[in-house]
Length: 110
Ligand SMILES: [Zn+2]
Image 1 (cartoon, rainbow, N blue to C red):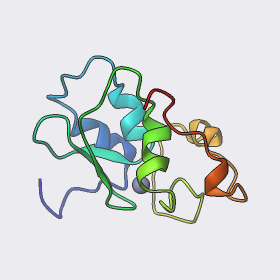
Image 2: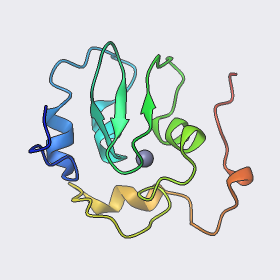
Image 3: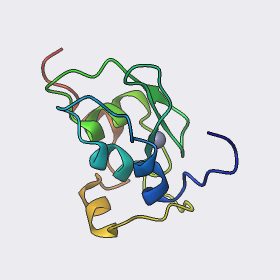
């Protein structure tokens, strides 16, 4: 990968998961909420806030984990970004920006 890859485009992010082998975490959801695959292992990175997350567990929720580690991600906070979604309606699942971060539900099994 290099700077020429346009990871602001969701379709490009999805393509980065070619060798993704974690069956319980959806690469479609990862790409949808800003992530692309960087490796090694299951390490992914958000194009918009640069957070890197790995060591996924079976009960993990992509959106919850993203918010947990990067509560101010511009994509998740619905700030203007250059994101090019495949289906923008999925981004409606995001919590409203007015929510205080303390009110965001995070992983329940930890
Ligand atoms: Zn992010």
